[in-house]
Length: 400
Image 1: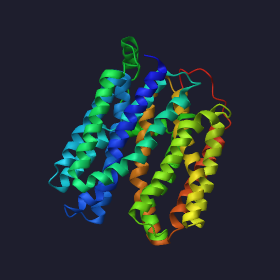
Image 2: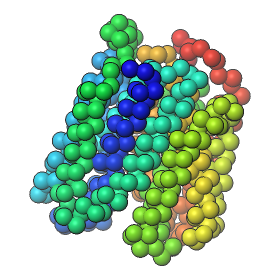
Image 3: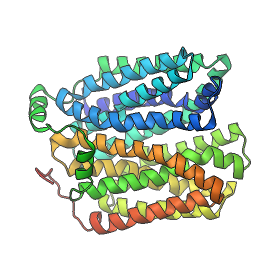
Image 4: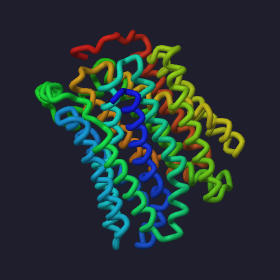
């Protein structure tokens, strides 16, 4: 199978998976309310997925180095299918928590798909390939909530079962259309070299390794700032933009469309013209200024205008940082490193809703924007001092 067909197959698999995932996200708080969930419990339910993924993603990434990308993709998607079936037939709040945590723990298919792309692309085309995954991610979040809203008229079981069916299609797509990207010999070599399991100590050491450490630090800070906007936007739209639920959904679709355009088209354009280290540095600055603008322009027109630089900087950073990470670590560490990146992103989705929501209530409309902009100032400093000055080598190093 040619690389183009493989990338297209991965695009469809990720799109179908994210479509199933996102069609239930807007409904989860309402579903939990039927079991008498408090506001605090609703918040814990949202955070439980990210907390479980924080643990599971690096484990799955490292397992894909040892046992191959395809079996781990199947394991991940299989867990998602079971989780949605449990959601459909849940009869208590604890079952909702268990289903979300199961889906989070096994939901590392994005990082494994990214590792697959690193196996089948060269360094020149890797950013474009990873951008396609980002575009599939964005498209899933455009169409998923609309489907979920329509199916919810049939009850909460209907969208959960629809998500399970979509995940099953993705599972079958991996079985029949996606060959293993690592040869048996390559898996043997990776199994010999990738001996270190994921621990907090491993994460701490990774954050302090030359170049890899600053990249992961910037990944965390960018993710925390970006998630602050994403996680509290529905509440912000209701309280300060006076939007109803459907209008807020249209706004989210607008942001998703912009991100799709950036990752599907813009990534290839910019990566062909600017060094990746420069893209990271200037995108950090742009995102910081955009979030600062969010703090001082709390109106619909301002948000619509800020949506473009927000999508541009966020789309570039989420793709390029992972692309550079695959180039500065040995081959046997790619899956585990992308898993670490995904786990840091999951951590931001645990912290950001809590911190951003508190600031929105305590400080008003400007609080989350200032908080996120200050975080991005740290990302600018790190990228300017430790990433921008370094000329990335063309060949993969044997040691970082």
